[in-house]
Image 1 (cartoon, rainbow, N blue to C red):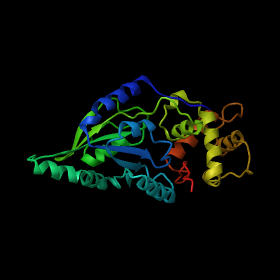
Image 2 (cartoon, rainbow, N blue to C red):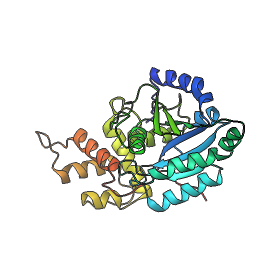
Image 3 (cartoon, one colour):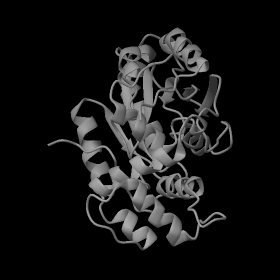
Image 4 (cartoon, helix red, strand yellow):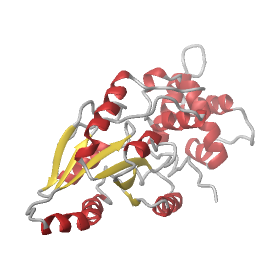
Length: 283
């Protein structure tokens, strides 16, 4: 299942980011804590190569807690500031502004010595679609400044947002990159909702998700749906078991695979199968 999704507005977004990067000192990149590498846009490293960086591991409440701690250490070892957050509940949000301002402290002090009385900290906030950027911004500001939604592609234009008197954010639409070289990256992004569901085959996606879960968290599907099956059972047979267990049967006695697939994907995204991280940090 080779997934590629790069609609035209993302090309415009990338161009807009390139044109505005000189206006900021810091780039704040939101990653999905369930897939910290797969959700990291390689284009951002090029775009922000001369900027101070903060990595936000968002949706940490949905991810494997121990794995998130390891990924946080990993990014800090790479020279980034790293913070884990749950933007929906507001956890970890209060740490962002102080970290950004600490990164700017030396420059601010230098400019003040030259006579600049007021030096705001300006940051560009970036990330893939549906990573929770708008929700995080709204929690930072304390009111609804940015549109939120549970589908990829809600934010479509840039906007400056004042978090506090001396801290401003340039919000940008969610952006992917033109081609996923690794098929597994596209799949993982689709599992978490970063790719438009309308272009996907829901049953095939659900089957691939089962394969990933059985490999990384072998009890997740069995415990959630109260089913048992041997290791190596084909994923389409597991999907059929789930449909029967949930009573998703169409006229004629056939399992409703579409409904079953959608339920599985939705429940995975909502952490009802447990707190799961799909990117494994190699040691």
